[in-house]
Length: 229
Image (cartoon, rainbow, N blue to C red; front, side, top):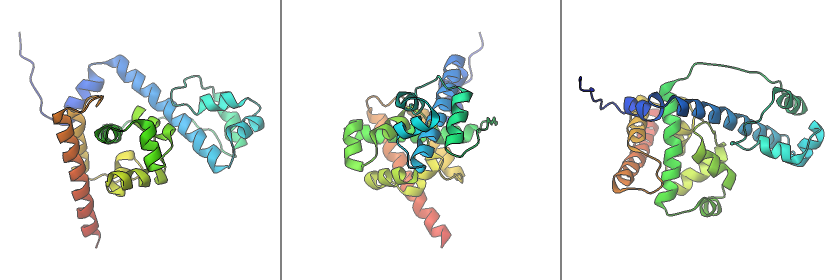
């Protein structure tokens, strides 16, 4: 029987662990990503319009509970008809767009999810405690830790980077707010992702991986600033 060839490439390890060997999980991740994107978009556009969930519901012709469910990243009962009604109410047009995935970008975004969860746990904080200390909404923290598709707003990134003393630019790159991730960030993110599990409890090795990655983000940000002068 041929011996399976081992690989030490972090991106390949990550792909095998979370994607390649589990097609059902892969499909589930795609569904969660789409749901999180829809929920975040509706919530952000509603807030930009200065509307409460109740006010938007009245204008759309539905109930507040329906809007609340639509803004829940776990909700999977979207209909194009309802989304189109919401879009028109908010002076937007609804488009369905499909594009090829960038595996490197996916790894960076996945790393952001794992890092924010690990940083919170390394401080021994619950989601509610972190929300109180940073001023970030509890719902936003939960969304960031549940889905790598969730994109926090600039203020949230600023609050978290200030609290954890991680450069804002580095956090923004990991979260997908800035698209110019350097090869070094992609590589280090891939290494970190390959070492991380669920971070339900930080092992000694996981804490070392977290500390090393955060140290890299800080040093990489200083290098970027020096290069910009």
